[in-house]
Image (cartoon, rainbow, N blue to C red; front, side, top):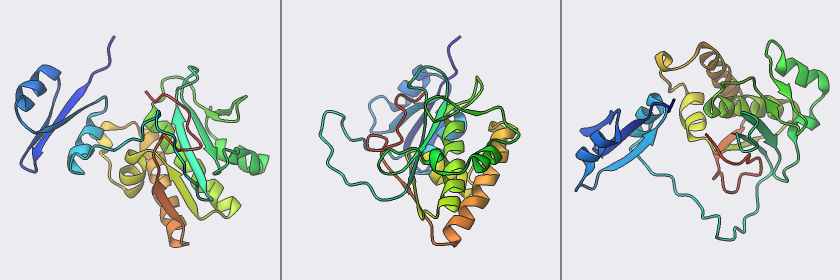
Length: 216
C-alpha cells in the first residue's frame, strides 16, 4: 500500500495550504509562481510553510567538493544499506564517535530500548521506525557524546530536527509518544549544550561525513 502523501503550496503568507493529492495541488499552482513540495508527514509540510517555503539548495554530486570540515560531531540517519533505519555519529574524519565513549556510557544510552550497535558501528532500530526519528536520535547521541568527549560543535543535515523539533517547534498530535519523549530530552540537552557555549549547525547531506546514503 502506497504511503499517504501531502502536497504543500505557497504563493504568499495568506495564500498557502496543504492538500491530499497532486491533482488538487496542480490545479492551484498551475500557471502561477507558487512554490510546492510533497511530504509524507503533514506536520513537516506545515513546518515548511511556516518557515517560508524555502527550497534547500543542494550541491550536485557531479561537482567536486573541496571543503575542509570543522572539528566536531556529525550525525545522520538513513536506510541506504537496506537493513532499516540506522544512525551514524562521526567526527570530521568519518571516525565513529561511538567507539570513543566507554562501553558503560553506550550501555546507558541504550538502556530501556531495543536498539543495538550493529556490525557497522551504527545504532540500528527495530522495524517501522522513520528516518525523521532516526535523525532525532542521531542528535540525541551527538549531544550526549559531545558532553562526554568535550566537543563544542555538532552538525547534522536534518532541518526538521535542528531548526524545529529541538527548539520545541512540533505538533504533538502528529507524533508518537516515543518521538515526543525524545524531542523533550533533546530540547533539554541542547539548552545545556548551548548554555555551555556549544554550537549546533546545519550541514548539507552531500558533505556530511556521517552520511548514510539514501533517505526514506
